[in-house]
Length: 456
Image (cartoon, rainbow, N blue to C red; front, side):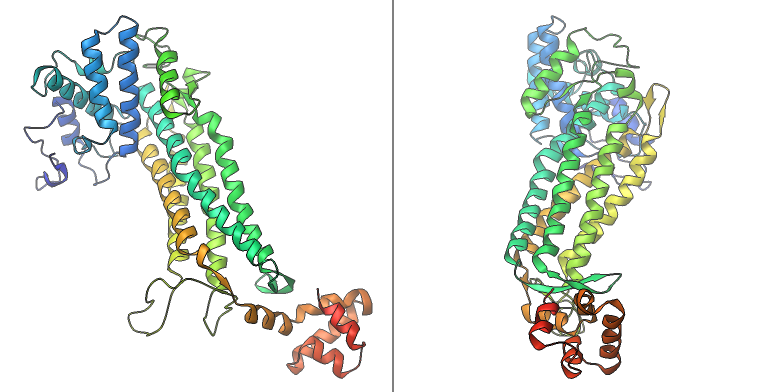
């Protein structure tokens, strides 16, 4: 395979090797858009190849494409779906807003490989033509939005949801394991009434569970595909049965209930489903931020922090301080969450670019949406495996914080009233004693009652 990333001139323009599968149109696109090094996601390329594969088969069945040509196109598309031609997709993210450059890059690669299958010679437009045969019944304007939905929903189903389920299971297991570990609660970063460490972790588990539910809620909109609308949504040049049959095959292949969009004009002009999906991803990122921050604070120390939990030690934490171990995984998760939140801003702006009958920021939207899904999937899996599953409780630290807390005075209110309880708390604070010590020293209540009231 040719490594196109090494084929750049001094201006950063990719130079096309002679043995490339793609043709002149893609070459012009490469030369016209030397902006940055970000490449179109391979997940999108493979989703688009899935469309091309089944489009060829359906067009053959509809009598629009000869069987030999259809078989060659489908075989070439399958090879791309299997990752065999990854190096042939050289276009960057910042290209024409419809993704036409990438669509033609794919059409040309498929046509070239199909011609090689049929004739032994790659390239050219005969017997398989990139537009007339590979792109038959399609436009970039309906195929690329469809590929975005397919790639995103497949990645959510196959990568993100399983990773979140593992994280949910890990947090739920810790909630059960820590069910009897009493600790001090905290509100406003100040001591509050006691709770259990298990209850605290149950809250984290529920946040992740709700994130999974949010992803499920957006699936029906992502499952709508624009395919069949061609240029502006009217379906010009596409057989009336083309979209329904092609989408049915995509659904069978992926195991996901994809269907034709209820309104093709909305499906091509708007990207609301992608924006909604990104909102769910952003919410998950916010949840992971809260969980990761809490866990690194609860594990702070080991001797001069909270130290209520013990985190797995993964690597030396300092190049200068011996023995220091940092909360590496929670910090990595925080950075992923920041990236996803930033991606959501880009996706939101991209979603606003539905000018008349077409959104014209599809490539950057696709890049950021698929990156967010992939990052969250990786972060959730690593968080579960390398951090949460190895957390243990420091029962001694949890018990010590409870005993020292002035918030224990809350348990006295039903017995001696708010004002007297506040006075006890102030006296304990001023003297450096615990609530229990003040109550005992001043014989405010019998010992048995003190123990009962403070066990809240």
